[in-house]
Length: 190
Image (cartoon, rainbow, N blue to C red; front, side, top):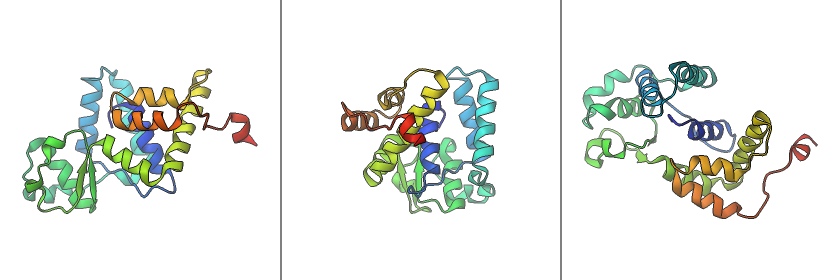
């Protein structure tokens, strides 16, 4: 969730009525995202703080507290223990993370869910809700067009996502190639 393009897509899909998905995080998770953004991604601290504040404002029910009581049951290493503990506390059925190595099957015994890479999870959502995913990608492109004052296509959005979720981007680029699937702003207004 540290990358802005990926976060926009995931959080947009979380708001979609058809998609039964609720993002969850802890204070520690938000701290980790902040460190990635200001470290590896080179964001200014002010921008990373604004991102964190926007997450908290737009998804106030997503923050999990009280997960610490599950930490003793979590034996998947320091880097991922709090994530698994949050999943247990929230009774989540999935953990979506790039850090799959922090979640070996034998270490997940207290939890009966699945751990997925964001690429795999978004492909799963696309296969379950293709119209919804395409509609929300179109909305992101339209929003970017209005913000930037120049045409942004769904292909542009997918190109920005490709470094983080390459299979998803490749699958959707192939699905939309040559088709103008996004309605124009006039069609959206009418």
